[in-house]
Image 1: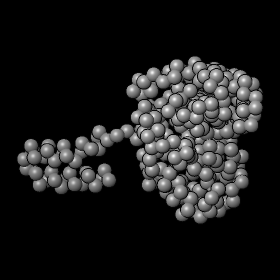
Image 2 (image 1 turned 90 degrees about the horizontal axis):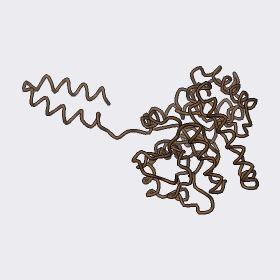
Image 3 (image 1 turned 45 degrees about the horizontal axis):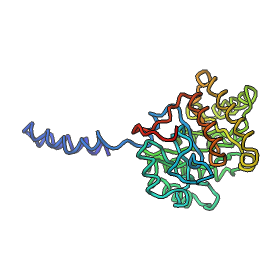
Image 4 (image 1 turned 180 degrees about the vertical axis):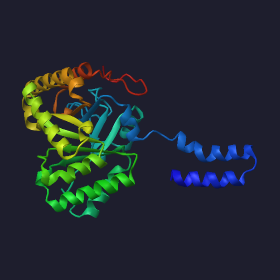
Length: 303
């Protein structure tokens, strides 16, 4: 489109002998390009670190998406349905600088490339992008791997200014290398699911996973986030123990953040914890990663 505008401007400049007339034309044509609203991808570049919340970072006691218990998450992963938040709720948080991603499930309901593409593309509407939950490459046939690569390629072409995040639980190998390269080329962030990270030994396991995907898709390392958390049953039945473990994980990650080139964390899933548990985890993230918790408009959320 920019090329079209440039061609139009060149043609108009030849026709316009009067410089004032040319200035007027430039003001009309160029101005919308320069000052257009920031896109999800542009906003992502401004966010350091990235803190992703699987579902709204609210306490299960009240379930109100307008009342965040945690202030550190700047990227929210929810379904597009009204059950996960009305248009008013989504507009409220986007206005305050939160990036909202509509969650999609590959091959859960749709089987053909066209069906998956239309499903993903529809979920781009009304959000900053999508979060694919999840890619398990070693469980996909070669046909489905090729299909997913094609879907990602088409999405990136159709939605160049929107985000594509991926939750990844793959055992990458030479057989899945092309899909790894497709994820690298067409997605913005890959969230490697580690979850039960205890300390340096487990972190080395994460580094091995990151080095493996980097081997098959050179350059993807810079797009990776570490996914931490636990399953719903564990978190809800032993909330205090689970939160204590996550707090220790976060503080450890903060201590190695610079040397390990960590862009942030993806949390699965704050909704499973109590208000007290969420606030403990939120404080650890803010202190370990230097997140101040304020919104872009400077609103004071929950301290």
